[in-house]
Length: 219
Image (cartoon, rainbow, N blue to C red):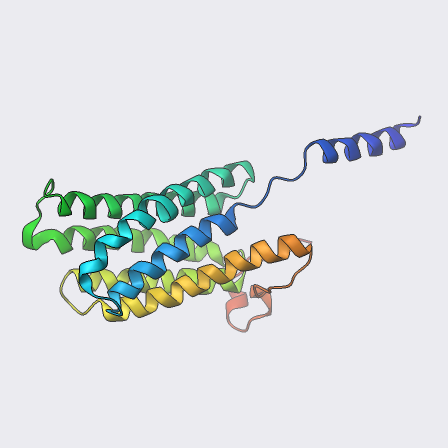
């Protein structure tokens, strides 16, 4: 058996024994989007304020733990963007859910300053999301759109928590954000199962004005 045939056989055997690791981004985005949607509906005042503690369960498990797990799995697939984004926002939902729970139980008593605690957290994540936005131009338009909606949502909710405005604009923007996240999540899942592009994400290089911000394609 010559070397070329031997290498080809070895490659095929390795591929069969070690299939490609599944892309965890669909899972991470679904957890992020669902939890964001629930809280955004509450912020938009589409449901009564008394049910706000109901976001704690999804925040701890789907938006927090599951998203954190998806982020760590991105380490295996060498997806640095997913690793940084999912673990960071998994921690965000764990923190927010914990703050709500501890305040409801009277363990932490912020009084009239409660909103400012969440407000400064939102400001910090707005700064963090800004360089996620810059990095998103190396991917596709759907991600740029989603991260843009993320920054706007965080900034609007930060202003709302500092008493500048109502939570309604941030809630509406958050619903749009959740839709963008669900779109990418669905696209990754559907495209992977079909083995071809069924749900397009949009090539940055083909979009006027935005293509100047995208890195040059590798030849």
